[in-house]
Amino acid sequence: MSPYAAPVRDHAGNLRDYLLAAGKATPDKPAIVEPAEDGGLRFVSYRQLEAQADAYAAELDALGLDVGDRVVLESPATADAVAAFLACFSLGLPFIPTIPETPVQRLRTIIGMAAPALFLQAADGSREGLPPGLGMARFGPKGVTTEQLPAPRVRRRRQVVETDPAYLIFTSGTTGRPKGVVMSHRANIAFHRGIRAHGLIGPDDRVAVTSPFSFDFCLGGIALTLASGATAVPVPRDRLDFPRRFLAFLHEAAITQVHGVPSLWRPLIRHEPDLVAGLDPLRSILFSGEDFPLGDLRELQGLLPGRRIFNLYGATESMAASVTDVPDPLPADLERLTIGYAHHGAEMDVYDAEGAPVGEPGVVGEIYLRSPALFSGYWADPEATRAALVPDPLLPESGQVVFRTGDLAYRDADGRLYFCGRIDSQVQIRGNRVELGEVERRLREFPGVSGAVALVAPAGEGEPELSAFLTMRPGAPAPKLVPLRAFCAETLPEYMAPRSLTVLAELPVTTNGKIDKDALLRARTAR
Ligand code: ADP
Image (tube, rainbow, N blue to C red; front, side, top):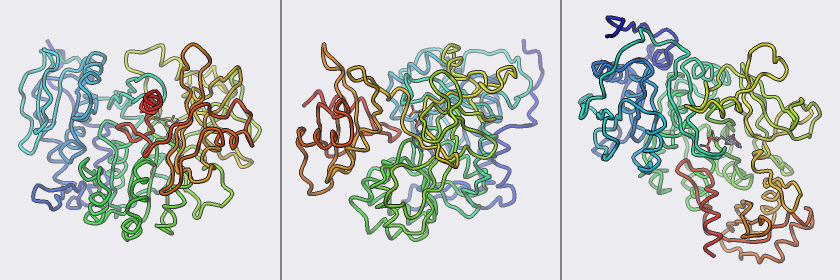
């Protein structure tokens, strides 16, 4: 029997309340704008969003779930999905966002690891064949409909507290094998406070969010927008996949800020430069997730002069660690973008391989992040958690932990940081340490190259082989390996000149829009 007659829902420190607070002053303003069924736009006001979230919460509550019970929330990013996650927040049900495109094998792995009580999908979702015993329900305009009740639960918790998990995100694996990153209400709110101090989003902004719902860049973007009392516009997949449709949608929805990974912009700049240049209401662009190739960035600035471009750096484990204005225009001799300083209320330090602080400018080390916005740990993985959340090297006695990001960076004389790859992208080639980012930088200097990735591929029995993957500007001839190697060897040691070359029409990307290294390696072997 449950020890408590009724849970308390006062929402102290709850993300639901935090995200809806700014909109209280303007209840009729659209919180979310999305495509309507009739081809126009549907406006969901703050008042409507809150009412929908509370209706969902009441229906979910009736299922008897306890604080901490996990819910897989599968949907594209829609207003209803936002209401559903707000409902999960208010009940203290950590949700795991997935999308209808999530491969069933990956979904099963997630379910196996996280042991959710409920699989909650959008009304028109078609997911089936999930493990028996898992509660199944749908959410939509008419509320929550239950198809299979969750196994009976005992309620042991009376109140959601701010250190409780708000959601779990399974990373796609840029940083190694997929891990379930657990984020608390408190860490999230700390992140929002830190980032909002930079004045990224004003209340009049209309923010297009382009990442899939399963990626924290999507949740974070929607949440930052709501917390700023502005309007979030999640862009549906079918608009994103075609440059013209996407740009027409940005026009139609009068978008003032676009969030997206750098690869979002490549086809737009290449195929529809005039339409990009015509995005009049657009005031700013925010990118995250990986380096923005400087050539693409220059082209974008050329098409959209005077717009602010924000570089948001960080990992799911802290949502983001810094936000920095890209200089406009980019200086001609600029070689690398800075990721600046940690956001308000946090700090990034650089340490060498022995864990000693790196003080001097220009020396590469690993970024450690000290922040109130850190994740709680990796789900069911205490070993990985201990390796990532380590005692503060400058205050080990305090019990404070910092996050070892696995990212490499150096400082300039003013202390600004420059990201230069992952620790695991430092590879050994014939006994020499090679930073793949450095190879890529040189490859991009080859005439006609528009995109470059360097990877190490296992070469049968022998040494791993350094491989180059290139895309070319329209009309530029594909280079041959020998002259490309000679070009690299002009400025790099011989062992940093690639031994194989694959020229592609496009660089493949993952569902999150980041460069898909596995697909590249497959493209190489398929030659
Ligand atoms: P995954 O890609 O595995 O799903 P994340 O999205 O958490 O996981 O990836 C975080 C990593 O992406 C960071 O540790 C960093 O290496 C890289 N990254 C994120 N933002 C930037 C940025 N603005 N510039 C360069 N690299 C970035």
